[in-house]
Image (cartoon, rainbow, N blue to C red):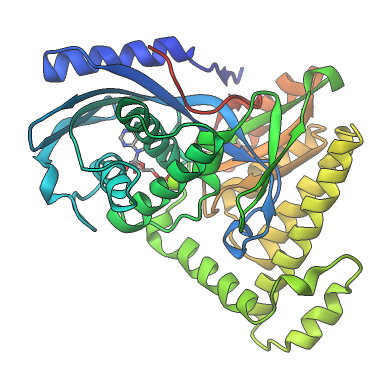
Length: 398
Ligand code: ADP
Ligand code: MG
């Protein structure tokens, strides 16, 4: 029988991070902060065009135990990795350190670069997370955001909504410049600004947010994350290629092209893009923007069950027009729908990662079993199932 991975309570995540801190650094941290991973209800591969997306925080999070000191040293440990990374504060720069420590050390570097804090401090940081890495649930932004909030609070930088917007910007700089990975700001905005029980209608050009209620249980529904355990591979170039394709077609078209009532086929004709890959990318962006608007209207009207068909249409668009799905994702979506899910789609950058399915509460067991069996029969990795109740943003836990 397939099971769902239960979220670990924030205080327990925090305890593990504090324990690791004691083991590795032989002292106690100044405090422990957590930040959540995220799922995106709808609006995929359009964040970096500046369009609106609809993400929410997951009840899975990353905890960081942090101590500030006056030496020119950074020490970083994680329960996910064996070695402690240690280096001079003054040596952190674009591309250094390499690998996972960049997602930690890059944050104080970016906060200093943007003058959010006056100077780069000496820090010891221990990390523990329940967000699966590389599953399209944004473990990278969860990690950066927990570190950013910790430093902001320890140094008296603003942490109200405007302050959190600034921190999200700093985290993007850390990931783009120090870690060298393409990210647009949606994930960090969720980790730092999400609200429990709400999805964010996030304008990815102004980063203004409208919070929309998503009371699934009251409607007899649940959202389920299916981690296919086929990691998305951002560094392999598939994501970057699609992203640059979308950016290229979009820069030739612009936001004005999708005002209400415009005929999408007409826009495609006018764009006169003769490469099928570019046409597909453009069609995906144009139709996905429409789907976000449609889902927002349904949520405002309290018609939760009706959003399912838009989720499924989004998957078809990502699979057929943008071509960023995978065998594992398609298999999970098809099996969830076959078991009676109201809608299902891949989330995140694609080429692996996770699926989000909207299911009736009394169908959860059936859906889990159907998806697990389909993966097994196709010789694919066994998926994990996660709860997807909209949760709160980054905060201090002890
Ligand atoms: P995603 O954000 O979708 O999970 P990314 O490739 O953007 O995938 O980010 C994953 C990377 O973030 C990992 O490869 C690692 O470098 C870093 N990371 C995430 N969680 C942790 C953790 N708990 N400990 C150390 N590094 C982590
Ligand atoms: Mg990421």
